[in-house]
Image 1 (cartoon, rainbow, N blue to C red):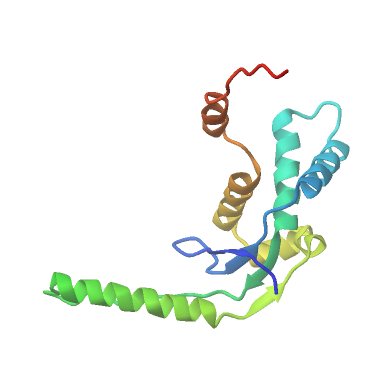
Image 2: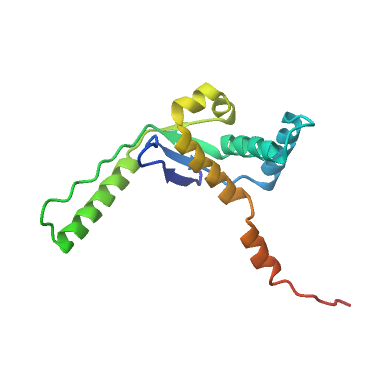
Amino acid sequence: MSEFHQIHLAGRGFSGRVVRYVTLSPEEIEQNERFAQSSITPTSTYAQYMAVQTRVGMERMIKQVSDPVIFEPLAAPPGETPEAAQKRLADDEASLMRAIADAVFHEVTPEQLGEPENWKKLFGTRDTRVLMAAYRMEHEVSQTELDAIMGKKVEVIVD
């Protein structure tokens, strides 16, 4: 049994696929860093290095991808009461959760995802942007997080 994070790439301009991914280990992050270092040239910028590292990290963290799960919520009928709207929205949410649970998933490898044609078959531009953000959220530390942690540091004297 495996434990994954799961997101549904739903909305205008998204593929509708459900993606299951893992948080990479520190060793895997180091491998990404080494690969990115070996993939850039001496004239490459830090942004280019980070782009390679993020791309390789995304390819390594994604483990399963579903066929598209396209869900159209029920339209609100004219004169719908707030109570009826709340029930309709709850029914829509339950239907979407069932559709995701019933989705057909496919195992993917970093090698498969590293092929540009394979990536394009699965994900569009907006999907890629979300997956990049997911990678950064799971694996990078923001300045705000760093400031919060470092703001709590204390000086200690130990004998």
